[in-house]
Length: 317
Image (cartoon, rainbow, N blue to C red; front, side, top):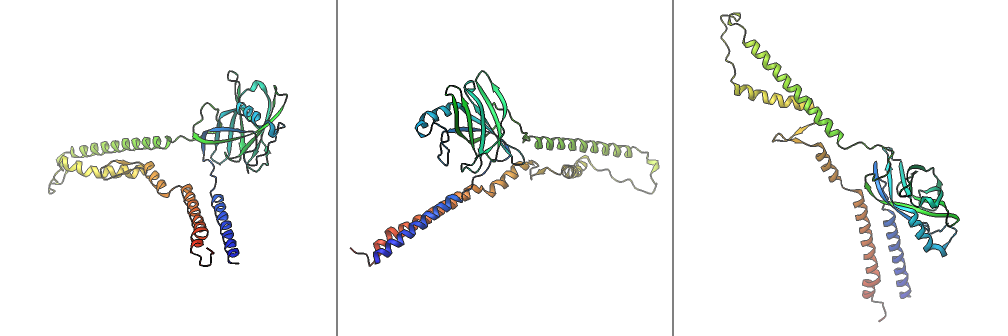
């Protein structure tokens, strides 16, 4: 009876461990790409990547031949575009276009085998390389694309699947359709504003100096006889008094520039980067959470299946 209870306890612990592992894996989300233009690696699949279903009429017996054929038909490079609203487009490139007719595409955003038809736009054709680029909208870059096309040498339609991954910033030799603002525009505008403010400040100093020189050139007879002439400030004193006013004017006029104790401009980009880096990456926290769950599950298995078994006084020897 005791052995039966012990086995039942170990079975329940094993089930708890499996549920914990499944929950940890399911809790790790799939993040979509942010606003930008990326080149990606395109991969062809003769069977559905997640369900394993083969829709092509060749079936399981033609898997090796079908996979080889789809690898040749699909170019290994693709383009992913994400606009500012989060809409995603994928551009795939088909090879051997002189042997392919009427390619059509469907998209499986949930990766469960349920596809929806999409309209594909021809972006460019390279008759020298015998390739054509097709652009279509997808829910995100993780969606599975289904392609059915008529292959002339085979005399029938072929069905296969396409996925993209390993995104890198850039467009390669693809034709793009969205606009991504350049990172250099804000800094260029800031420098232009600083230079204009400096120019206006220097003009203001010149006008002030001309006014002071004209007032000092007035005849002494215009002054009251009883008033004693005030001593004029030395050049060193005037330069010292004008420096704080000039720096304060530039700082208040520019509004966007910051300076350290040495007088060097502090870049806003470096400050924001430091703040962003301090917040951390959410992916790291999901990975750490998964590691903690696996460690706890492993400890339960060790305790109930090994440690407790050795320390059980009712265990038969």
